Image 1 (cartoon, rainbow, N blue to C red):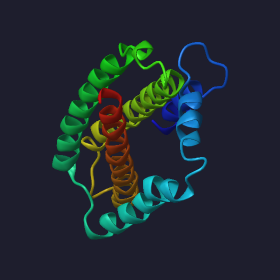
Image 2 (image 1 turned 180 degrees about the vertical axis):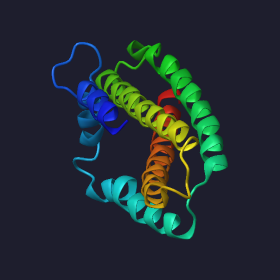
Image 3 (image 1 turned 135 degrees about the vertical axis):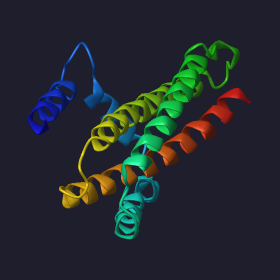
Length: 171
């Protein structure tokens, strides 16, 4: 299973791919925080610290992974609905800020694809964790819990970013 996961990841993050360009999506998304180092800390470093703390207090069990799968699936449908709204947004109405509106639409759609990729990864790992024997693999369960908690926090913070940008685009 780890070998197949590694090979799939290698294929998805390959450079100059004409099929799926996840590497480009991640690089462009991180470029949003190029001039905002504190925001980078808030979106990516502090959630790591928080997820480690949460996993010390509580390690997710099979039921929680099932619930995570349902909730994240709903997030994916919401994200794709938002993506369909902003891709049909006509920026020609905003003559004075047309370039800025196009840039915000591109950044927002990139953030949506980023969140969708994270969500799909969370769902895949959650489905695998529902089949794992937690008594037998305690350290794996704790490690995966840290990763899932971290990705969920990053996902929620990025959804807040998307909602904020959607509010600006629709007003």
